[in-house]
Image 1 (spheres, rainbow, N blue to C red):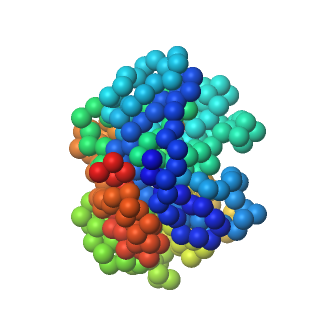
Image 2: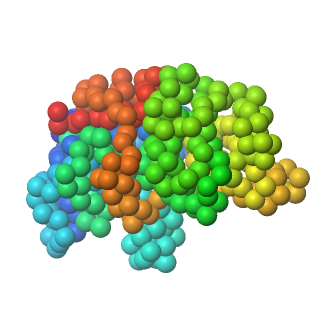
Length: 346
């Protein structure tokens, strides 16, 4: 089969031919319908060899959807032909976190060598994907897999982040979204669907600020050195009850810290390498700073239910498998408006 692989440190990903996978006991083989392209992959491909936690070559793609093509021995709960989405952050399934469906925080994954597809295990940007356990599949039903597949990360990750701040996002509150790209434009929709907060979106791109307005942001602000002051102005000097940084670079983390209100939340989601010092006098009184990862299996079901209700929709650009390297080039150049989706089987 064809697959998009990151084959050597510093090299661009390339389409190659690899052996067709076959499901072993407990495994499920998917014919991939759609696979998302994510900035996390760009971050991984920028790491030096000593920082890579897994061997190369690696088939990319941690957002996957497909139809069940074959079942390994002992598999129950899914049938050949089912349309499913893949829950990406695989865990051991038995530790205290996994027992709650929070496999994104599995306590034993590193010890056991368990990795997410596309982030250590072979990923979804291929004609077929081998899934380790049927519990990592969520039925899609009548949802369009092409428009739904980004929700397995670009929807689940902001949903998980926002849920932690829901008690603070009451009527009269303000939520700030830094970065209106793949995750950010979904976060805006989730905030509008789940809260009564005023939503302020920040970005450096006028095109992405226009997308932010289109999907529901009440205010848009250019992300620059004056952004925090502008947020303070919009909030009568009080700051925002929740700031979600989907860039995670040094300047955006600093903006988040400067814009958050007393007892507010700063959630750094992006992998831009930035950090925010926390200590008395460095952030407003009792402000909390978090760096969450992905989301739980139950939360993915909730996100797909929001999509089913029409509350969230991903802006997508589609590419064939042969065009996948070009999709990564566009993403790296900041030219993807929304989310890029690969269609490995046409």
